[in-house]
Image (cartoon, rainbow over all chains, first blue to last red; front, side, top):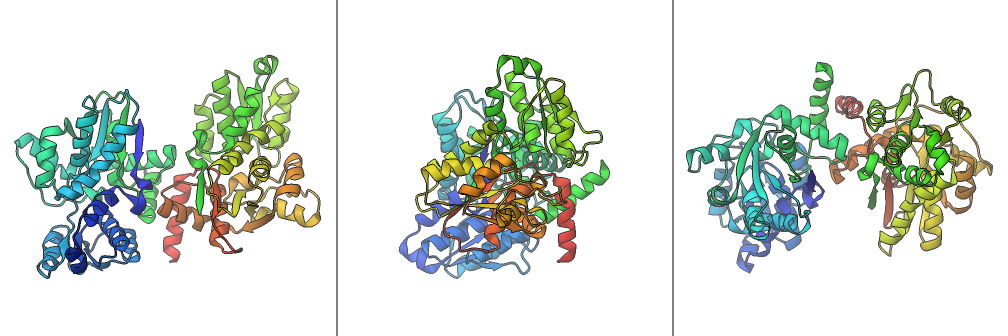
Length: 283
Length: 283
């Protein structure tokens, strides 16, 4: 099992790839007008970092129940965070208010520039992964990472199977695959906070063509995978980022040499401490 | 601050460097006779791994209160672990019983081959660290890592200051420096379980000549550094391995660009969960 450790990325997740690509492409007028983004946390931090780098004013709309460390980091990077009354369900709508006032939206996934940026991860796997890799596993939330990376991988390493992984309680991509069209599900409660959204239209148009299989994992399996990666690989991975390893550990499929993408490491240690205390008590 | 992340090393710490060097140098007769080692945990795992690699039978003497994950890993690597009645104070003596039966001792630090092996870390810092590095910080327990690395660094990067860091409750190297001769202290209780031993004779002969300064850090500072590295760098570091970062964060000295050695990552998540629950409660 090879791990692509995006937890070590600037901002703690792969999201800086898409955010930097989208910000870099903004014209002078859009840069002056400022930007807005909505995010459960990792895209928020990435946009804040990229905006600071390019000197662009940023407003980030985050749900009230967002991971508090992600909110603190976004603020520390210089963005204005808006949380009052924001939920996973209304965050896009709330961001639209700022778009109507003239700000440019950096969408977390349904944007070809963002998808292009996330695709650099697939490019790196294609360049760096050993020749005998049979499979590459990606977490699916909105689908930006897997779709961008699938385009790069399919072109450069056509024999590598591309697998998407999502939480069982929020398996919109799997439902879409079975229905043969994009299905949107309401945001569900899962430890994988980065995967509460449904797959986007642009991402789905790629996923439906290029992704070989989509599997889902239970929250308990995800937490066990976080524990496994922490104790064996000494890497801090957030639940969303550990879904790929959870899928491999579940032995749901024959696994030759595989690359598992650890999409981010913005874990709340206190949340984890609580889960582990419960775990110790149970055992 | 540059981090030398030995938590990502095979066996979870720098100890594999010395263990592999010592095992490789054993003659055919010693390999047949088998080896013995005593360790609080990281040297144990490293020796077990190296012994398996070279096909040598290994007995490892570990204190009864050793980190249970380190004990489990040592056993899993194929070594015979002896724990009954073993303490930090009598472990060397208990290992001697096996030496008298004909086994070859792989000492955790007081052995020139082990010191040579640990020194490859200093060699890598000399090769990889940016030109403007002013300081390299090493944890001190028995002193094998800092002494081996100091020899390499002093030769190749003579302008880099070499700093040793040890727990305040078990500051044998600092006491030795002040006394002008090696002082041995009884093992003390500290979260830095890898630094409960006093600095060895051979290591001291190097440290007294080549190490520029020795500083000590409190247990609470060490735990805060573990938390800092986990949340910011997304790396799992055990308390002993976080002492160098604790020293830098304490601002006890002027710090230009510095390399902090994270010596190991064999953290017990349940121990940490408990400490963090207490921390949340306090705040």
